[in-house]
Amino acid sequence: MANGRLNAEGSAGAVNAPAIPLRRPSLAVLLAGHILQDGEVVILIVKPSLWFLVLSSLPFAAVASILLLWLLLFTNPSRPETVAYVESAVVISVGRVLWAILQWMGRFYILTDLRILRLGGVFTIELFDCPLRKIARTRVVASTLERIVRTGTIEIIPQEGSWGLGNWQMIGQPMGVHEQIVATIQRAKQGGGFP
Image (cartoon, rainbow, N blue to C red):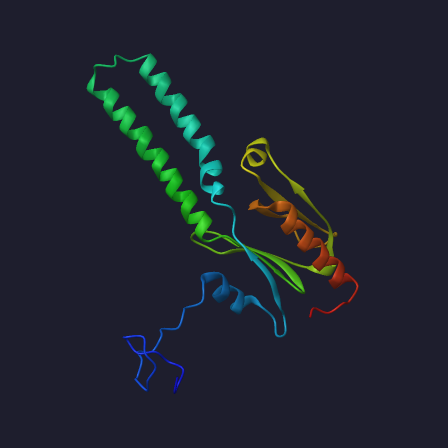
């Protein structure tokens, strides 16, 4: 191969191949690029599990279903209003799922060698930002539904100060992610560097 490229027929030659388009960075990389300090190294970027969509919409859908059943029990099913009730319940439930999708799309959990961050929000960006040296402890908690779908929430509990409680909600493989967070916190508190 003269120049290491193959032409359209698969043979080597000095043919001007079309330029390969560069991949655009993800939203997490763009956001992290704006909030990172000089020399800060990103260790981990995580999104909630896709089960977030189902589990966060489930209580709302359950209430809508109960109200719909109640209306259907105490109204005449042959009346035209009954169809409107069913359609309204479906539209409201679908709207809640769409809201969960928007929340999921905007939620990122970032671990760096200096800080732990949570980015979220639909219309405004909410930021939890705590230095690793100021974290008192972390723990994995999981509701019954989270345990069923093998997800969990990682609670970040800072030392006293101006930082509130931070949660990484509905993470897939929470124990592995938690181990990585704990190791990074210990390394930061001991003043160790990252290779």
